[in-house]
Image (cartoon, rainbow over all chains, first blue to last red; front, side, top):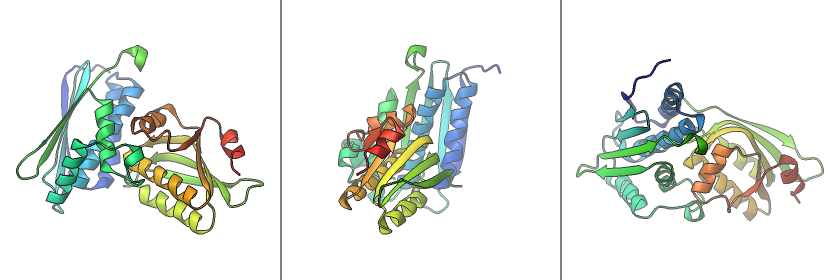
Length: 152
Length: 118
């Protein structure tokens, strides 16, 4: 299959966790048919999953809230931008605090912790920018570069 | 729709209050509650020594890792254990990234993990 880079896709889905597996698997499959390695695709699947989970958990206050994920595929990298429609102040504050002080498994209180997700994204990507505006709308931009074949 | 995960249980011969569980599929935010309920039921039935086989566990995210840490802590508090064997390279990488490798009892080999159960 001939792929010409860059190409861009935009996905918009309801702010519900149940949509996320299909989204992350779709991105992973697109990467593999775009000649990125299975390992690159797997790591990107994790990034998409964690970003989408945060958007749904922190940024979907309204029942009909939606999440928007944009992906641009370049020959040497993929860029993700995910936007939510604004979360409750307490949820956005939690997101802010996890950005300020990332947690690890050793201090996570032994229960699922969204801060761990952002830490995973940070470790698997070259660039992570989080913007939270005055209305608590969050936009996250992530850049992940294609690795050398030796490290894949 | 939930991600697909299947848990298959086996007795561990010669060990009381113990079970081997094979995890098959993906563990993520959509099915952690289901898995949590199944394992808590085992704990409530007195089965506190668990060996989990991750050979066919393709995928874990941070939410899934959170409950694995929770199972490990709960099993130890109840006088049992939570031993993990056959983790694939991709899943292990995520465990390492969040610094959980030292908090979990991880074995390369299933037989070794089973043999380590008291």
